[in-house]
Image (cartoon, rainbow over all chains, first blue to last red):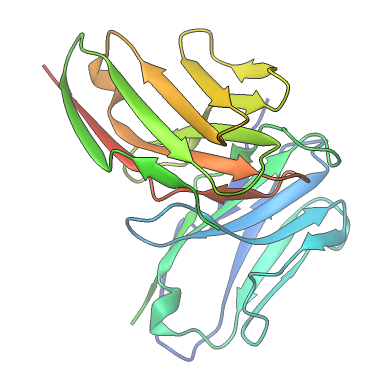
Length: 116
Length: 109
């Protein structure tokens, strides 16, 4: 079974530039998550999708971050414009069952973003 | 609110045991445990659900005290491969996890 795919793996940009990350979850997984992990901290949930709908985006800085999952499969996370404090690893995860709770989340390798 | 993990770091020799704790101020539906090695993605270890159900690796043991909203991960007879940062993720429902700051475990030969 293929795991969660993410690209690119690394990205270096100047502040005020824009950047986009792509994620392809495990086939058949209804729920997709984007996390931000700053060095030395645990992952922080940015947005959670169920199929192509947003379940939770309460911690997404909506003035600069946006995410979509148009066909309920792969997803894109965008930052525009980037700030220095956006430097982090952006992790994508997916899980099989979308309702209730207690489902294992499978993480992708992440995209390491450096904003200069 | 972020769960509190303790200790922040621990160093063991191969074969020694360790306990990592996770405490929340909220009523929890489940607690998830992950291990992350440097530069890699978090890897699933175990889920402990309200009511006593557990899902996870046979070689890993953990407990969940629903009354105290506390969970502990037990690492016995540690191996070098156990080194990494351990995160607990707490869930109040809907598969939304809030992760702790992590516990760094280093196993020495």
